[in-house]
Image 1 (cartoon, helix red, strand yellow):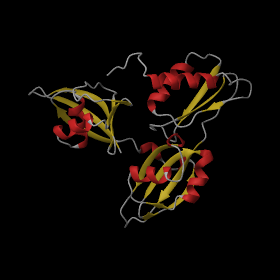
Image 2 (cartoon, one colour):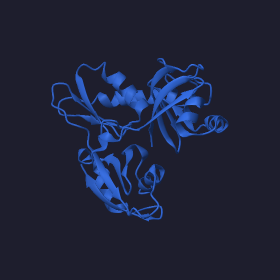
Image 3 (cartoon, helix red, strand yellow):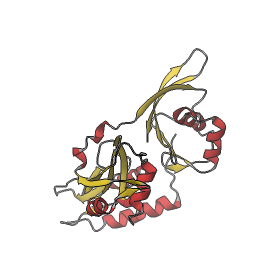
Image 4 (cartoon, helix red, strand yellow):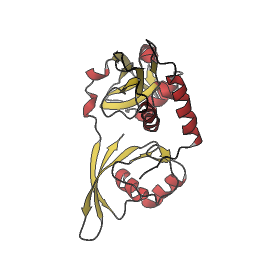
Length: 255
């Protein structure tokens, strides 16, 4: 799926604001964003590629991070990684495990804005990592004492100490009749097509970080499809056709 060069009004405003902030980057002055979603990152990098006098680094805590921070600095200066920290959240394994939505709700309930929080990764049973801006890490670690009815213990950690790079998604192989978005969602999340269609028309599906309402939208290799509350799918590769004409493909599913 290709979005072309078209931008929504909201995207135009965001990009213009980002460009204004770059005007102050000179000498020893730098600019560090909050966490950006992948669409914002794409817009920011389009602007930065035209700025030969600026350099930048991108970091979200681990290589596969969906939400990232950009640190922009003059090209002649030496830059560093953006200030991203991990809050390690642990709870007793014999209790009901909180999920991504529960953890995000608990962190935002402390008063943080959504763009101050990056990815949330379930590392193993009873342990997760919440990426936050470094300036908020100690605050979250001290004040996050419970997620729903589950008591948790928190500590601040360097993201690279948590071996998050291996959390690269669950591989799903299967066949679909077509590369329509409703077929992809049905396979990836194990839902009926009729239910998927209702979810799409209800505004719960995003493709390449833009909301969609058409179940017949065609998906291409490399596209990412998110279903609110369930996770994200990457169409990793199309593997050909079966003898009955169905399309073999490989998905990666991220919680």
